[in-house]
Image (tube, rainbow, N blue to C red; front, top):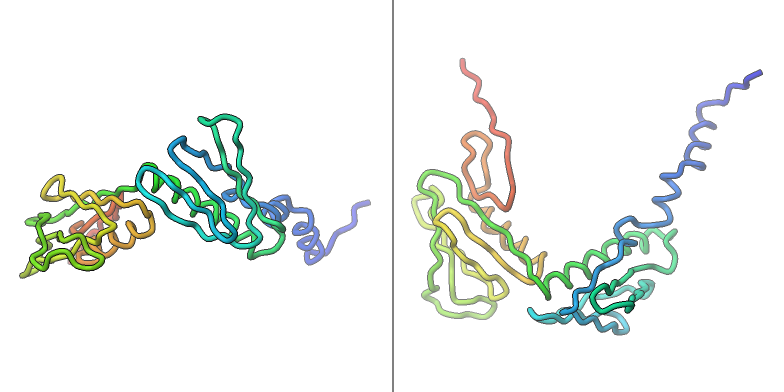
Length: 220
């Protein structure tokens, strides 16, 4: 004889015995992934941060007191770094687990290879030129600027920060490079904000592989 279980009790039992809920409460799929260490990267762990040194420079990633780092020194060519926490059940530690792993990985890539992103100028008459800034080298800036035609009655002038390397490969293609992924994204977003891609004619400044869906105009 089968006994019918009330729906409220059934939902509670499902949550208790659900493998997904247990998994999400104890581990981080991003945080537990080992980080490969290139031979050119040198990591030094301090009391509250880890220093990453490479051919392109040096940077530091802050560490929470509950973050645990495990270095694998089996072979120089196959070194790895594993990030862990004291208690993965604690929500804050679980959140910072994956975040810290991502920050360390980005720092390693930035100091050894660097990050780059292309910008595409799509529109009739849209073009860009890299030129010297008449104001010269100022604090925080490289002394160069982007001179862009974006459909306005005036040119758009954007000074290049000192941490950003800009190249105009074509009149409609700009390549930005930086050792910091976050700062690179901020500057790319700043350039894009001058002419965001619009969905009717498809014009604007596109970042990387960005695409938009063109809307169709209803005819009366």
